[in-house]
Length: 298
Image 1 (tube, rainbow, N blue to C red):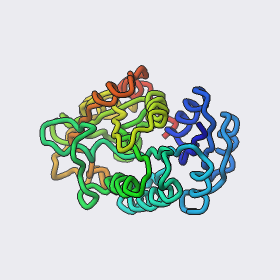
Image 2 (image 1 turned 45 degrees about the vertical axis):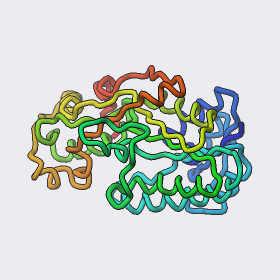
Image 3 (image 1 turned 180 degrees about the vertical axis):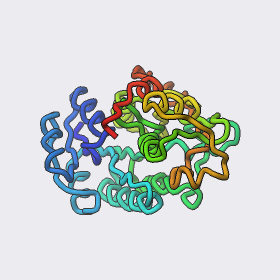
Image 4 (image 1 turned 60 degrees about the vertical axis):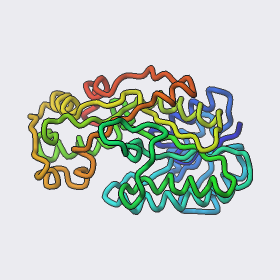
């Protein structure tokens, strides 16, 4: 297949590109950076220069491909809600180029929007939160509308995706720890975050686009839930910083915008994903990568 990949030069996208090319697919990768485009071409992909803000570029990439994997997302979480609405627009644009065809469109969401049954992990077939409650749900709402105009849409929901350099929401959390001079968790630190290594997530995207099952939902969770206390204590040891608990009432002052997530229990199951696709994660676990955290990289 010839796959158009947005976010092709990002942390996850670069692994997806390598997975696709290694499996014999052709990749058309979107890149806004001339410097990163060099690495993308060196990996064996064809480069499409442009941004997700350019609707004509998106339509061009989608129209000349057998399928699309949409990974690009603005990770400035201080404007998270707006970024999610922008993603809604991008998906609508891609869908318009694929409407009425069998070509797959794989979109990217987050496992927390399926944490809708109290006391249970997020599961692939759970009802999802609405975007007025969880902004990231805008992505899947756009996917539903796309499927209604004949687009073959499937969704990959991400946990904290990691290696020793980058770990999803944990990366800005580490920066807060450095600024404060102390690492903190909320309450007793028992809230859990799911996780997966970049290589495992890259392989999952390849399996999803190859299967091309309409309206399928997949969870890229290698670990169902890692307790925040374990995460924070591991970071504290690596950074040589003290660790403390903060009360829920103090979370906003300490974590800022990250207080939206810091104390929330967000475990996620990937049992159905593994059963459907034969996906078996093999990469390092989150705490292993945090123990090897590249301190100078943040």
